[in-house]
Image 1 (tube, rainbow, N blue to C red):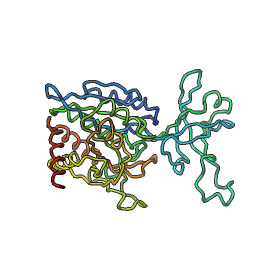
Image 2 (cartoon, rainbow, N blue to C red):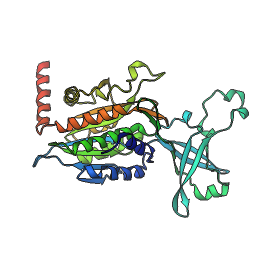
Image 3 (cartoon, helix red, strand yellow):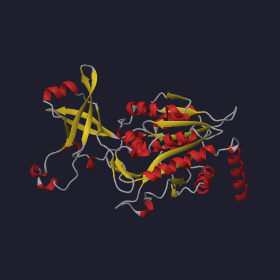
Image 4 (spheres, rainbow, N blue to C red):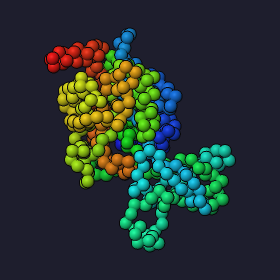
Length: 366
């Protein structure tokens, strides 16, 4: 049985910058292997696992999607042994200074080599007075790996990736803080749900997908959904947890359960079923309106091919896109229970019921 906190730590601390997710993909391949029937990588690199349903034939397909990529940095120049950098994905330069990083050097005798480094800038003592209160620009930030300039130039090339080195911190009240919980925590939810489903019957074929390149445009979700061609989908991502400076209307509390989104990106029939399952299993949940596009994999999946009835289950997260993203472990556990129960309860004719309910609703509006 997967232990939740060690699983979250393992996934958080793995490396997998958006577009270069192979290290975390290999970890996930090993983790999912006992719970699924087959796996393969999509052409963009998403990991696609199939757990077959128990119906003898004509099984509909459900896609569970959570992205495994993380934000990071890229080398833009080498100056006197120091590395100039820029963002990969939505990296926030305000939180970079003082961070430990790993430079994935590409020129060490033709083989990759990881170099420990730190992110730094000029000390405030030498700054002009007018610059001391300003956010440090990208042109003033550099990475120091501690090597002589000629050694740095031999090992590091422009374009090399840099990931954050951060161990997960266990806070009080079963709260964890670490990097890449957006969206590795939701990958953990899918993992825990697959483990529970190993002991449950389900009619549908389940395609668990760890998507790539979400942080730069939902690319893995687009390609994976097109290839899987699901009949139904549930995407999992994080949402803004309540914290200082975040308006109440934009944040949800940690520890009060997973979040089910409502809005045009999400099929009302699938949303209704998720709510019914949560209430029947006495799983606390929260609702979050999304008036337009959700900005998650759900947005890409919904409009794939002729369209896919899609829902979004979210995990409350504080300090998004910072190296100290903070979650409540109980929310992870509850989301996994909800997901597994939802899957196990899908009848073979659930799609027909969705169509019938929509037709009745349309008739009622006339």
